[in-house]
Image (cartoon, rainbow, N blue to C red; front, side, top):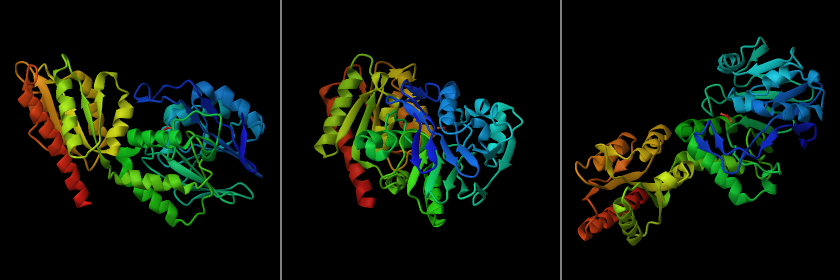
Length: 400
Ligand code: FEO
């Protein structure tokens, strides 16, 4: 279903209602997603980004609703990840002489994915291509989301097409931010930021300042996933500024696994200590929680307390994926602690503490270990650990 988003500018993307996992099974997408493609009809016809390969024919049908694909002169590939470039082979069979516009790193990644002899034009920040009445202006945006990523700006329409930046995995029959549930929209925008863009937060801040310094008026932001920011489009830019600063909120996440409920009882005692000092908390049982939802909660919180029984002289394997995510995502400004039950050797708490310290969490040790089922003293120690974490959270607030 094509939408003319501005006079002569068409959304010709597709909605993937069924998507529940993205990046293989790395990221959960409970609300599906969209792959947004934008067609600009001027003296020349330009298309900015395509869709994931399995949707190429639906995408071509949308393009045909506006123009004959053979009439496309310029195809901009802002980013080579297949959710945006996967429609290129099918499209280029119709317009083999079209110019494919890529960033410098895109000149590696697009041929690397498709091994086709397309007419590539490499652009950098500030380069332009005239379509007639409008120009395309390019801004390199490395690491938002890959080294090859770039933004395309359409003059005269004041339209910024920043690819993955400002996007959301959010399938909807609406195309604009002012037409959808605001809570769901920001929940998905935050989930996207926390799980994908957090490691590049410093670059996000730099890029926002760089784009604003160009002085280009922005009336609309069309990301490559989810809805288009039409009403107050810069609100998502402000949100990115806030998220990139990673200040967090006065709350805590308690994440645990348990074999015989000993560590669960300890988790609840830690929560009691947090609550006693006025820090709201949520407890997540790792094996049955949506990992990306938990990571989003950790992103928003100022404290993480991890509970694990000792298994095979270390922490339990269900926490391993989380530990790897905490390493890779590089969360900042968070305090942490660990606790757990053990039967014989009891290494889990130390292993968790050492890992979190390597991930640059401010570990308020020593953690609490309980042999077998926790005693009343063990649970009191867990509650005191929660209080200690809460006081450390308060100290970070005083420092801000
Ligand atoms: Fe939406 Fe980095 O791809």
